[in-house]
Image 1 (cartoon, rainbow, N blue to C red):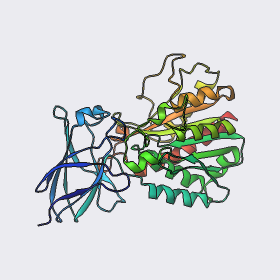
Image 2 (image 1 turned 120 degrees about the vertical axis):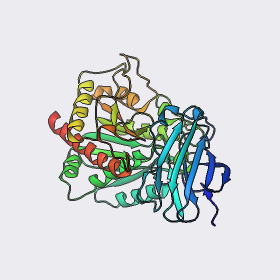
Image 3 (image 1 turned 90 degrees about the horizontal axis):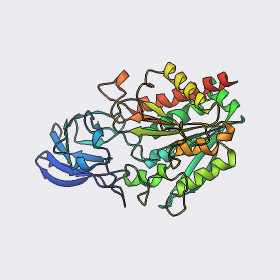
Image 4 (image 1 turned 30 degrees about the vertical axis):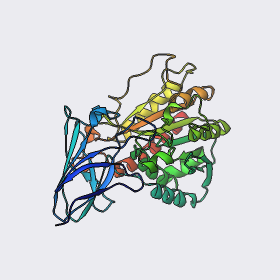
Length: 379
């Protein structure tokens, strides 16, 4: 009989093995380096074909978002291409997530959400950079020495910035980017042609390569949450934000979207910048109009639930969306945070996969379709 073995020493891997007995294992999630954040897991389990695995992830009462576990189902794949939901239960009193899975073959990979590896990131950048009319530049270098990639296309006057994965464990954000970039570089797409005619589009598909490779949930190589650095980034703590903000200052920003994932809310939604001190006439209306267009375009988006709105003048300017809207308020900049679920979009649920890479990519395409409508209406 092949004994159960569990490994996570690979790109974005994260798990610690506490005990293995037969086909059952007790596990724990490793914290982000120099941080108390932990929630992301990604590991492989190997055993005899047909084995019934029982995998318990412990200590979750102290995780970053304990409210994210009730109703959550772990993702599993045996081919690392298609990811489905495994049978998952959560004992809130004990803080234990139990995953039960019967192997078809001999190996399965388990993750908090379908991983987006740094190798896939480089494949994406290589493919897009070869597209006609696409410019690539490295905005800067991370603390681990990785490049911060930016892909730019289009000849129009409207400056659009799309950034994703400030929080590396929110891998749905880079799946979204793959869908969006696929559309923008599709020579047969009328939406892409019209966007590129109207806009200069700057895309940073992964703001946090170091955290991504290290298997972090929320922070970079030195335990810094990048989405709390936008008011005063430094080369020592947050070179990723420092470089991106400098590039934004060079171009100006008229429309920006910061793409994320939310652990607890089972829906796709937007968060805005309503409380910025320098809010100008038309900024809030532009944001509301975009949300309305996106809601009409796809059932995988809604406006009923989301985050609380900040009171006037009370926005947290350390966060990307608020800082960008404030910094470029004189241009009438409309910025927003797009949140996708680790659970599912309950208004249009998928019992087999939950929220998935495929739906993330489609949402990327839908968001760009809504952006074109938004621009046409504005004209």
